[in-house]
Length: 203
Image 1 (cartoon, rainbow, N blue to C red):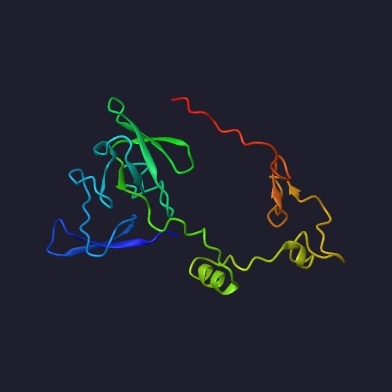
Image 2 (image 1 turned 30 degrees about the horizontal axis):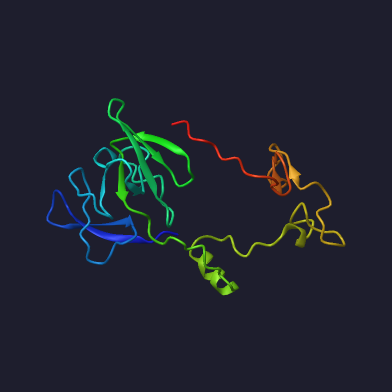
C-alpha cells in the first residue's frame, strides 16, 4: 500500500540513466535529488549502510542481508529506529514497527525517514465501489462470502435450514485442504479478556 518513487540514477558503466523504483519516504518531492551509498548525507529519502547511520535515527525499508533490496519496515507509515551499533560483531540493533528488536549486519542498507502514505487505513472505505477498486488492482480476495451462506457442496459450514455452522469452528492443524476452514489450530477462542501483558525490554 505504500507509494513508490521513480528515481533515475546515472549508469556506472555507460552513458545512460537507469530508472529504479524506490519506496517513497514522507517528505519526498518531484525533482528531489536522492543519493544512495556510503557517502550519502543523512537526509530523508537517501539510502545508506546502517554503519553510517547514528543511533536513534528513524529509518525504513531496511535490508535483512546486504543487497537484498529491503525487508523490514516497508508498509505505509512504517519506520524502525536504530538502537545500538556493535562495531566488534559488525551488527546493528533495530526496533521494528511491531515493537520487536532485530539484529542485522551493519553493512545492510536502509532509507532515512518514514514510509509515505501513513494513516492510509484510518479512513473508512464507506462503499462497495471503493473496496472493489482497491482490491481489483491487488488480487482476487473481495468480496468475501461467508461459509455459512454457501451450499454444503461448496463449504464445510454450508447448508442447513438456518445459517449455522453445525460443527465446531475450530479445526485441527492436520485437517485436509478443503476441511481446513474456521479457527485453524486455535489455542483458545472467544473475546480477549483482561489486560494485555507488555513484554519488558531486557536491554
